[in-house]
Image 1 (tube, rainbow, N blue to C red):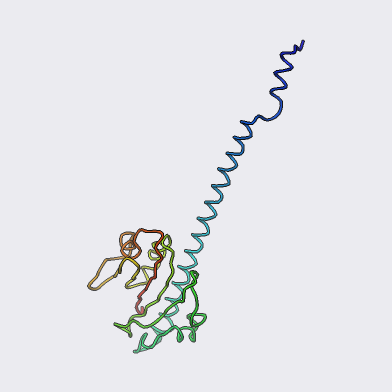
Image 2 (image 1 turned 90 degrees about the vertical axis):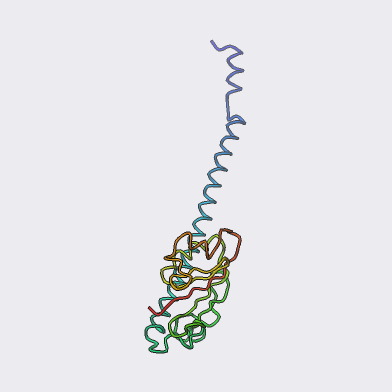
Amino acid sequence: MITSHTLNARRKQSGITLIEVSIGLIIAAIVAAAAFIAFQNNARRTEVQDNIKQITEVISETKQKVGINGGAGGYTGLTADLAATLGILQSNGQLNSYGQTIGLAADATDPVNLAVLSWDGVEGDQCTDIVLAVGDAATTITGPEGTWELAGTGNNGPMSLVNAALVCGDDPDVVANLDITFGRR
């Protein structure tokens, strides 16, 4: 037999309680936040990979078309305008993904054997990733904190996290202007 006490208890138990709704909303908010963070990390990773690819392609094309095939003159006379004519850059004044003009020229100290790629506007939290990835193709990299040099008077050894910090520092808010010097081979 159902008593009035049992009916009152069933009425109170029917439906979703406010606590259950709150728990559901909290779980949904946590899932949404995790998805948003994953999306941001993926977008950052994609931008870093795109920049690494562009830098590597410019260095590789420059070495092939000018450094190796340039004969005894090497990089002498290399400018962004000439690089655009040779198809290394799409145009003189081409912008990188940070909206900054890509610079490419013969190195002032050794124009025959060295060229400098200027890659400005690099976001601070991406600088280390980019420097680590392109360090193998470079002889020196200069950034907001200083210069890494593979050999010579400032020999820092192969690119590493410590050496990337010499170039980029550790402040993710600092915008880095990178000068990447590379040789003929």
